Amino acid sequence: MILTNGCSFTAGGGNWPAAFGNHGYTFYNHFEPNGKYDIINIAAGGAGNTLIRRKTYHALHGPKYKNNIDYAIIQWSTIDRWDYPVFVSEDRASDFPRMDAHPERINKINYMHNGTDTEGYAKTFYEKYYSIHGAVIDTLENIYHTQLYLKEMNIPYKMITIGNLFSMDASISKLIELQDGNERGNYSNLKINNILEQIEDYEDSFYEINIIKELLEKIDFNNFLFTDNNIIGGFGGGIIEWLTNNNESMRNYGYHPTLKQSTRFFDEFLWPIIKDEVTTYYTKINK
Image (cartoon, rainbow, N blue to C red):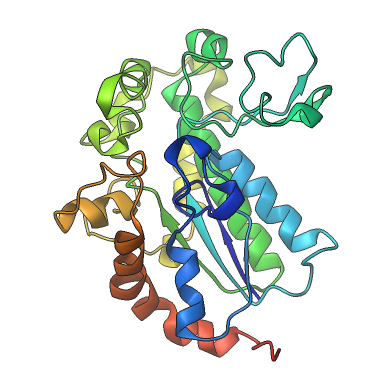
């Protein structure tokens, strides 16, 4: 079984954001034409990196898929997304994401998985608590711990990204712009030279918790597949850079890859790199 996980750039079917239409088709769909592979796709539209990490852990250790995963592809989302488990009481449900479509979630713990949202339910978080430092260190911890999970289970894997995680401007002002007008959701507009240069000054008395440098040294970047060689803090290009470098527009489907673009990304970039590894480790299911 092949495990795929990520945000809407990997999610499909019922996990595709309804606001983007009934598209539901991403790179994971293309495994089937290349062999009878049993795929479990746990990606969710709007997911942040904490949710991606925890869903991966549950897939590896939960009763449904434990000991059945032969290979994994994890796609990381932008660093700014907030994924704290929130108890959504009835008085909170009016502005919490997706409650109108899922009233059964009221009076239960919910995760945001609403992408970049600085104006809705998460407005207070972004105004009072969000920092670039926090976004960077949380993302690096999520990546590092997920690599430890996969290594512990002896599962071969590759990681990709929505885009170069350190070349997208994650400042509040740019995140607000991301939600305005016709360019809403266009992460390719967030290009910046190096997000590490925007990290806020660190209060020296907390120096023992500033482990960004150590995390960058521990992350195994050899298990990442980057679409270009513009390396920033260890990170290269992702799906967004692959499309833009090939003069591909992302204006359809709420700035997500189209069916044709997903096919090309898989056939021209992803599959040629992972084909031998997948066929080596995958246990084919005879139906």
